[in-house]
Length: 327
Image 1: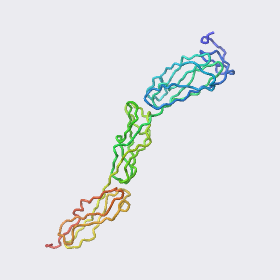
Image 2 (image 1 turned 30 degrees about the horizontal axis):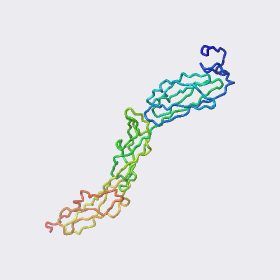
Image 3 (image 1 turned 30 degrees about the vertical axis):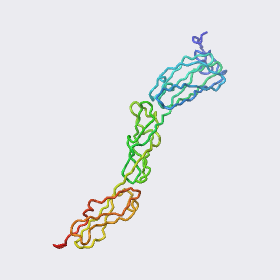
Image 4 (image 1 turned 90 degrees about the horizontal axis):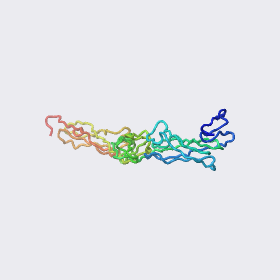
């Protein structure tokens, strides 16, 4: 009697009986020995090529060899791009009077990073009930190498923050014509001080990948940190002399002024060394006119500041003639 054309009216195949379609006669479940077939996991790093590594399985009854062959069809056999839904694969062409095996799931043909199912089915045997444990194929994202280039430079601000653009990142490790850019615009200098700052770092993560045309960003990993050379240049402090007016023949008094331009948190005490002094070339014998009062005496800690004279310093001292004749 052909198994294919047989009719088993009255057989309860959901509870008492088991039949492996087109391969066995009805089998009494109570006489079958359970066997578990497990699809072995597989993995690879994204390389832009279709997965073709093949698959294997193990069984809880390794002394009982399995036979049979499988033919594959379905969307997974030609999968190229990432998909929100799993790729399918259909197995047929298996037959045996004892076992036959097929693989199903989403792994054949998988290219892009992700986890794809390896599903087993189709085994048959006269003496066993068969259960299946699925495996998985993992395509791991490819690690990119990233460095900071262009020596990001800023004027001293009293902090270590760095501003970056996509042009400040050098990226290598692409597959084929893939390309990504990095959108992280914040970084940090290794010091906030001019004389100590010589490098910049930036924290990176998946959200900082911007995929180019035809590129799937999830196929790549960025390092958690990128490094490169960086530089901070001095800010400017200005000596600003207080204006003074004297009558001809008067002695030059103690001159005063202010130093302006400190960044928030900085002041004369914590950002400079020395004492500000104010001097003029005028004397009690100087003729009426305008004279300069210039500041000096300070040195910037860590080279964070450079010093200039305020433009008004050039005429900060006025000597006038209280009478008609001053000689």
